[in-house]
Length: 327
Image (cartoon, rainbow, N blue to C red; front, side, top):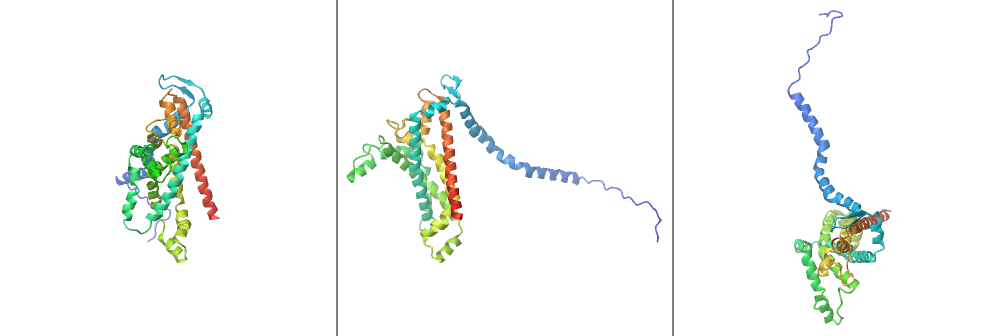
């Protein structure tokens, strides 16, 4: 059968859309919006809280530091950078900074080294390993006020446990609160006792993520346990070590409660400010005496900058050591 030449093409009627098609398109758009925008909604509460309770106080502190602000009268006069200039000429500010950095070094370095050694021991096969892992965290969950009171009695100038032990071996008693470096040691010992176990558990978690095959291969090659620790364990947990260094830097430079309780609650930190830290001096200038809110804000901002600088220095040193080993 032949068809007619030039016949018009047959046109089929358009199929009417089913009720399900608009619903599918709508669901598709909602799915795309969910994938694209829902992550921002999930993280928004954190950033809102951080903006209100974190970022705003920091920015407001910068603003207040430019004024001579009296908390009692509420009077406020713009003075620019005068508060910073006065602080840089303040001998007590530099004394507090010296005390802070001294106690920070005495507490942070031994603390992280001992924590690393303890974590390495707990990472081995030993009896009652779980009990020891739980036990080293007990100092960290103890109230810092209770720890401060107990150590204040242990390092008491008269009838203290440490001086009694020194007396049993013929050593003269030490004036723990009247000597700058003795007070540093006492406060640092308190901090080390409280936080060493916490850092050890962090290191232990990082060590357990290292494949056991690496240690087995090193053992077959004749590497000793000590060499495996320095050549395998330490390099592979270096990011964790950097994390603990930065966290310890932040906490160490903000130390407040331990020296305060060690000095029986006196904000001056000894008769001649032997162990007064920057945080204690900020509190003294802001909430006692003349209630110098602007000066306290300027000091807080300087402390914040010091923490940032030290954290960046630590990061750069660790990163440089990593590149040196890679070469």
